[in-house]
Length: 159
Image (cartoon, rainbow, N blue to C red; front, side):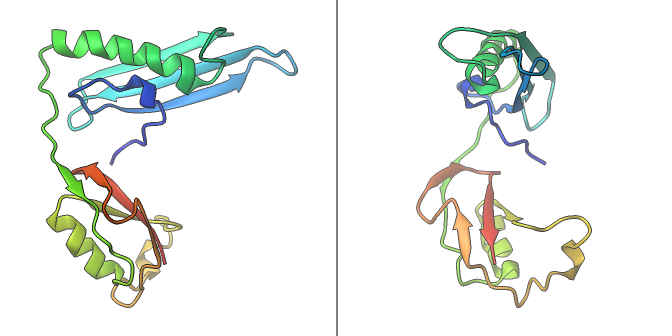
């Protein structure tokens, strides 16, 4: 499972970091905020967890977690990961194929061959077994054909 990185500002060159940002109001109509970023690295085998919580942040990044808390998390990761001598990610970039018009079963096979995964919009644990993968045709995909992404990422589809 991969976490969607909302904190793009926590990126550290050479490492894959998974994380989530958060923003909340500190009370009702106070105009004060609490922002956060929680991240793990390296994503393939997490060894480090960082939680950054900022109370009533001000400045250039505003008050959103991605703008102020994630950069702090990224700075922490950038100092910790090399110090711990954790291996840098060795992922290859692949070009996203066009899977629209294919059945879900066919698309899963195509994506698996190049190191990508399929994520089906609207599928939950409760209804995943009711989907006819052999006869359900993909109508939309994100990202679209031709975009370069790292191996291990997901292609999101609608049918």
